[in-house]
Length: 313
Ligand code: A3P
Image: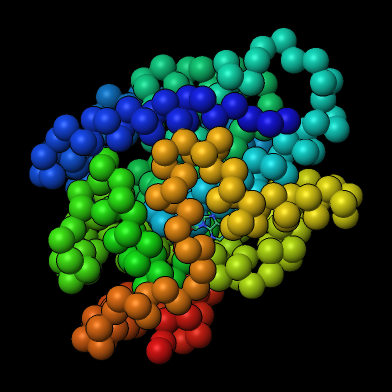
């Protein structure tokens, strides 16, 4: 079941065009104390989102920007589509294009949540929102939540390059300027550290599974199997292998013009671990180590991140 990506590419293209015509300080707006890009989000859509009714079989992929959400989104959609294809009649009364919604919950138009009620199959929904800003029904109706986390130094590095590549986000003259903004809560979708400490409160819930970018990078076979079993999806070894192959960095990058349009070349950058070593100064390392130690290190998510392995020179 190859999903249509037409709406995705349209939204992205419009954001690129709009971003190009705007001044840097017009690109973000604040909602409940958190910044968001005006070319993607709006107050009206945030208000409409409150009516979103989660289903118990929904799969919510929660990840801070640049944690690998497009990667794990591909794996989830592929697992669900492969599984559903076996169970469902191939004949579809409506086309994929009609059923397509922008994959991130908080991005779209105000009618999106009404249309989503009619989606006939298991819904895979991505979000960068902290749990307190998500519709309550996600927790009340016990949707499955896959929480994706990535070490903060690689997140910051990826976010810096992405901000300078994509016109919808404010760009930075220097890495040092970006680092200050990252550490002082000036990022779209808020502070990395707030995000992790908020999600940490849910990390032990039975309907929440946490996965790290780094563990998936080290063993994609195992990661895909664990995700499938969390979702109760059983596939043959060959089907699982195909999902693993289609989610390689190489394969996603090659396919990216089709799946992500102009965003593809900005998004699929290096796809590795430890690129932060090319940017962080000694002083910046010390600053981030200190904040991580104070806010995250002793939490469940902090332990999962293996900071000593991935964030020490
Ligand atoms: P880099 O900028 O470090 O290369 P998001 O999707 O949340 O915006 O995250 C983007 C990051 O995930 C980018 O990191 C991108 O290269 C990486 N990524 C995307 N697909 C990947 C894949 N198949 N394997 C590994 N990393 C991937």
